[in-house]
Image 1 (cartoon, rainbow, N blue to C red):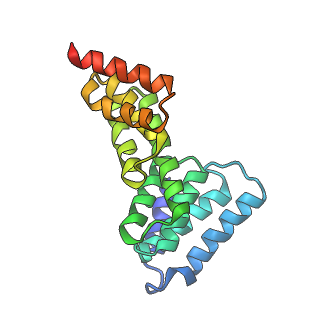
Image 2 (cartoon, one colour; image 1 turned 120 degrees about the horizontal axis):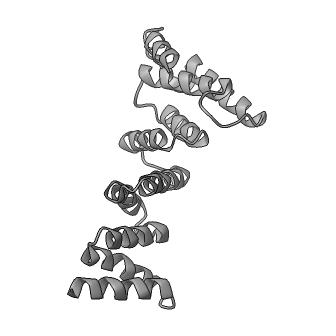
Length: 192
């Protein structure tokens, strides 16, 4: 990690800022990522090709933090190596400078749900909530995030907040026994 920080620091000052899609650092980052995929290299940051892709990608981003191509590349690369929180940060950065296309939105949603699940697994239910809320801002009809928010609010003993999510799911599929059960549970809990 120390090597990564030092390399980023040094590369930030190499040359003038330029359009990063033409930046040699970005080109090298892409080449390393492509090579890692072709060689089916284990998807971890400490493998040399993935490490190179991240280091050069981050260095290219330091030169010009608003380049959508670099942000997209980093978001996807971090997701490829299971660094979901870093991937989500880059998707959020991308969303701040560009409109997300369908592929970006799908990647953002997948990563946000994975980050939320990591919080859930650690027992941090409150920490899991905002990621599903982010998903619903992008895709209000997302079934998985609606179900998770209904579940999380029930587990957080906030049945009134859980009800709209279970109602939404029941409206999407009136035969959904799970949604009907949890909606009844939330309504009963809110009366107590």
